[in-house]
Amino acid sequence: MLENAQDYYGKVLSGSADLRTDACCTAEMPSETVRSAMANIHEEVRARYYGCGLVVPQAIEGAHVLDLGSGAGQDAYLLAQMVGANGSVTGVDATPEQLAVAEAHKDWHAERFGFANVRFVEGDIEKLDALDLAPESFDVIVSNCVINLVADKAAVFRAAHRLLKPGGELYFSDVYADRRVPAHLLADPVLHGECLSGALYWGDFDRLAKEAGFADPRLVTDRPLAINDRAVAAKLKGINFVSATWRLFKLDGLEPQCEDYGQAVRYKGTVAGEEDMFQLDAHHAIEAGRTFPVCGNTWLMLEQTRFAPHFDFIGDFSKHYGVFPGCGTAIPFGQSDANPAKSGTACC
Image (cartoon, rainbow, N blue to C red; front, side):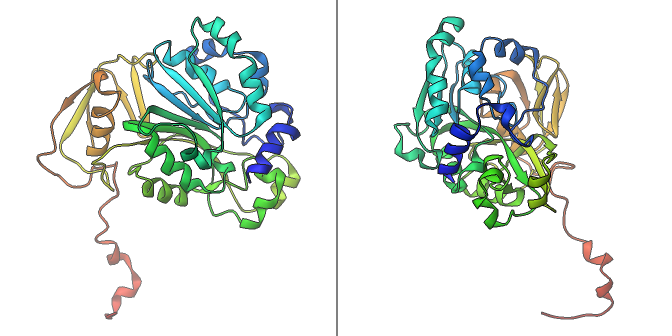
């Protein structure tokens, strides 16, 4: 799989215009801040961009960021402006041709930004333990449509958990399937290179993330993918694909369900670009100034991370009220009342 990815992105594709599907394309409308930062990125770097989402999490000024599968460097140079002179971005990629583009323009970007805070490392993101990256040394890890390309996805999640500081975050976009993609399709170089045959079934992703230590994956955005190439679509008949962005926090104490402890938060409106509304995930848009009830997991994601200075916190964990309404899984009992088989009795 690594060899095909290197060949497809290093030799087959000369730019994003050569892609045959929209799986490795970003459709989200960037904020004004992101658009301004994009104007400071070299045109050759932008021409070799193959991401499927916006991996620009909030409140990262001064953060140390690791970009897994950094390619020609667009996300790395974008994030470099967000973290500023006191932060840093380390990009890891295994494709020499992509890294050559990223490295060629380091000085150009440093002059443009007024500081140099980006470095690139050649390496396989399945083997991050082999690189000179210190455990618990990154505040945020990002990845943009790359994890689907690797064979051992569990290794990537485990290494990300090891490299993050406590309270750190893996914030990444990738392609997912609504069922497991047949294994034999991995041998198709186009399907693999277009980020489709290596896409995780969403249920397998949830399991792998939790096994790596990320207890409560949070979906941020998602969009269905259209497979417009007829030949590609014919091989994938019956499988639906989604481009999705997730955030995974490295936090002790996260529970399997969203539990209610009577807690609430009040957003101060102090995160740049989200002064009116803070978007934690697809289910938590927190309006500034309002008292906003939250589950215990959401409380920890705000109170024990870089977001803490931007919130007031109400309550504690001293009293439990059950599963949080509308956030956790509904109580399972009582469903058997609707089962037609209940007319008789049986033991097993």
